[in-house]
Image 1: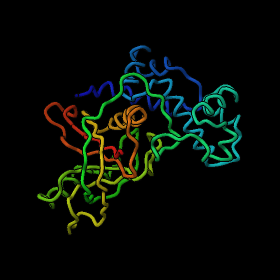
Image 2: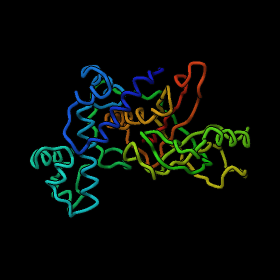
Image 3: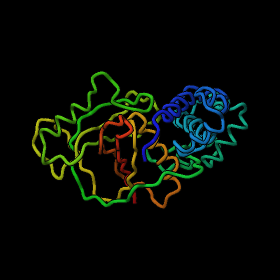
Image 4: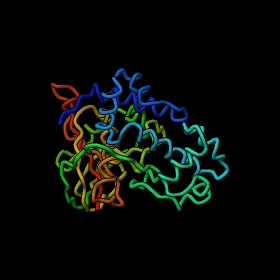
Length: 292
């Protein structure tokens, strides 16, 4: 299904507004006004494109951020953290925190391992509250072991990557395919670590090609072996810059309600089709989630 990138652009603007204002109190109507949509229309679109109602998305991000800060230092003052997380009182923060993580902030501060965790091992303190109709996998497939030849990049910017001036990834993919015409079966990218937010300047990104076996060529000396196993495959139609919204739908909505759990393997996004006469609307990316 082809999506409307203009709407995705407004959702991106809303998500950035939320990220920039996690420490203050605001309402969904404030965000709707910021992105020039009616409150009703905005909330419906937000849930549809990100897999979680806007109020729950905000709460999830505030509590995830608070948990990360608490796990990093046991010297944090909980009242100050509550106020810096957009809560009006220590009581309201503690109540929401305990409901989400099954322990109080003070217990969590001393023993983070005792808390309830989310489904994404890369973001253990993200526990979403999905609502409404969720994204569905296009298919579930079994893939044999395969080899991944990759180069390294870094950084997410407003949710998308390969945005730096020296990251002309399209030409690098073209070089890879030219050097390995009959051996490289697909180009894709993956994250060795899960991004924690929309702007993670140092997060590593690997990009390259899928091979049946390793081969000698000059494109890169880096290889990684993907293990055989099951994959849930999702389709993203449209601009690559909005891929993070589909990833959000999967991890915030589908995964927490599915019968599957994550395998110990990296997910990846495979680039199936580029721009055509319709522009970026014709771009197709297939997101592969390792499940068991």
